[in-house]
Amino acid sequence: MISAEQILNPIKPEAASKLNPAILSLEVLIDEQPVLRGAADEAMGTDLSGTVCLALAAPIDATHINVQLAGASTLNNSGANSGSSNAISNALVVFESSRNIWTSNSSTPRLVAGAHDLRFLFKIPGTLPATEAGRVQYVLSVSVTGAQGVVLASLVEAVRIVRIVAGAGGDGEGLPAYGNGGEGMDGPPVAYDDSVAESAAPTPGGDLPPSYDFKGKTRA
Image (tube, rainbow, N blue to C red; front, side):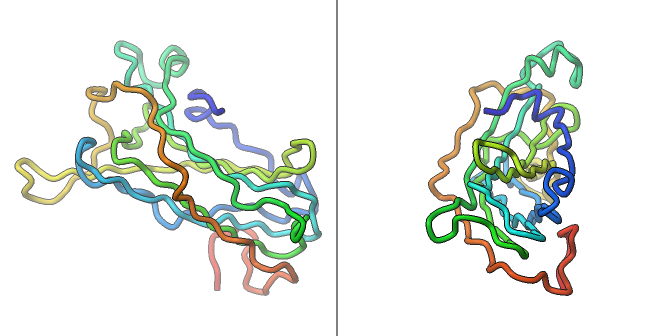
């Protein structure tokens, strides 16, 4: 369970290669930042998908790789300055969902050396508040876990959710909405059905291709 304070003030993990020399890099590639179209009471929701890219110089004994998407908001704290310690301590978690995109089993008891690309997918409810600096924030966390729950590598990336609403009367171009000034945000945290999650097995291990970028941002 992640807290609102951890979402609003995320701590950048230590580089994966420093935690485990067998891990050359751990990166996440988001296909595109999610866009919600329409007001909160009419938007149908959208997807957040991407790829976790793990490059290994040697095999590692991992038990699972987990991806978590979480969001927190201070918009319900009337009278509190956004970003203040009081606002953050009273912030609410508005979204939290996680899934394992790789798990060890009898056929794949460990991750072999080479490049591993693992897909993930989250469903974003249309009712979520849009990202707003200092008030609403979403983070995507990835962790590679070994025996006895030891974290072998991890990372945290910010996710920006944008809401586009039509102009007055529904005419004109849509304009991004980064929040509504704190009105209409009351309500319990949103839980989305994880049963539609989508994942893929890692690519076969082996030597890294010459075009592999350890930063994981581009591919030939």
